[in-house]
Length: 209
Picture 1 (cartoon, rainbow, N blue to C red):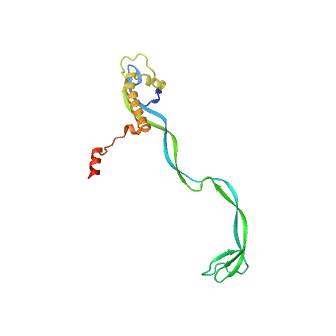
Picture 2 (cartoon, rainbow, N blue to C red):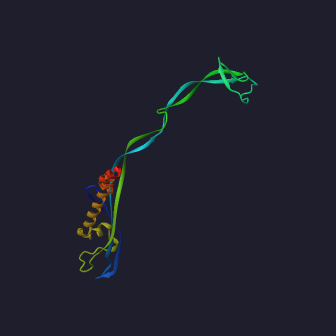
Picture 3 (cartoon, rainbow, N blue to C red):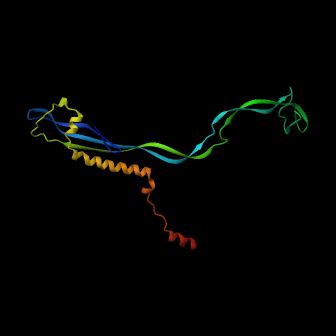
């Protein structure tokens, strides 16, 4: 059974029943049931947080680069030599040794929306659910039963209807109060934040000293 109280939802279930063998010729008479009350409150929580935004590729572009076409047989990396380019020729500076020609080449390179990762403040909305549970047993009178329902015909709804509203309602009210408080602690944390700061007159005295 589902009972809704404003934004709080209560689910009532009976996982267990206990019976007496025979009462006034009625067999398997229920004298006790265990009642579970699962209450929940679901809401959206919107807050601001800092997240790292990474570059995302938006496409490609053509770039022209210089590349050395080495002369066949040329030593590409002689020790203690500096490679320089001049007038389309590549050579090592000391001793000046030509090793190839400089050519231009077009290549496709990725293009990104931002050059490097950045920290950004973003607004996040999350769905949160808080819950509360109670479980207890309820005893039923087995005296002078007027309308007896055979055990095999029992339903959870029928047994729930035997439990007086005044037995259930205090738990529903208690759950609702607790869940609304938990919701408020999440949505308005400063209202519930307690601290022991240094009194301002103490701070002033310390600064003078």
